[in-house]
Image 1 (cartoon, one colour):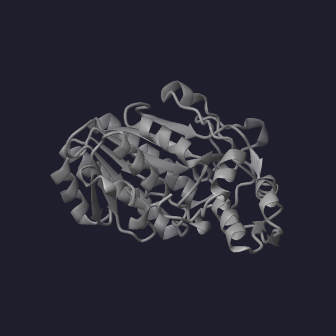
Image 2 (tube, rainbow, N blue to C red):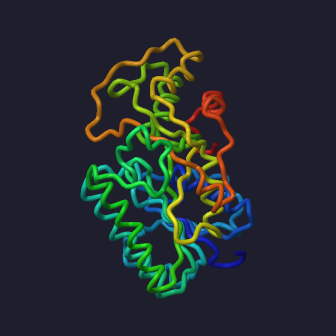
Length: 312
């Protein structure tokens, strides 16, 4: 997939998006970044901008009418949409807007002949609360909706399926575990929040009991899966996770040796999922992917540098 109009990354100036752009540019692809910079930063793209012949940045809201015109002009073969259900999209109105955003993208993709749309969805919204006996959870597992975000996540994949069947717009939905690494904002992930607390020499907060579990995925591992989604995994939702549950308390224990600070208890957050781990089996089969960075190693790499450094 070389040449003009190769790949478009919506949300490409954000945490996951900027790392994906770095990878795509390094792979020799021509990348258009579309980002309104409401939560992303051009500083995150400092490395990719050193190769201007492979990167163009559009300061544009993917929900604006101009986005369809832009897609028609550039006619990318693959569109990544990483700005649908982000950690910042916590309010109901923002979540509902995600379906509208995707619908506009799919309609534009149909009109200009985009070959594939790849979306990223948070696993906590996709699955909701999963009984312990079903962990690590497989893609076919269904639970009762926990809230608007859960319903919207399911709607997004159903919309993708409609456009695949009726208009031959291929898709892959990457269901992401808790991705962490450099450039992540502290408010967007517990690993980043802990790392920032250590760097700032302040006590972190642990919401609830600390026994709630997550599946933590190092950013480079997650990006490797996303890159594979451009060519593989058509018509599927695919977990991007390790299959390993780690409690928030055990996560903090990995940071504890590097600080004298102690966590402060905070109230549990409404609707917070209590346990989650993702089966990586489908990703191994369909993407040829599995994670390779143990959590302890990822935390070590993060604490050895400023985790908020945009150029990292």
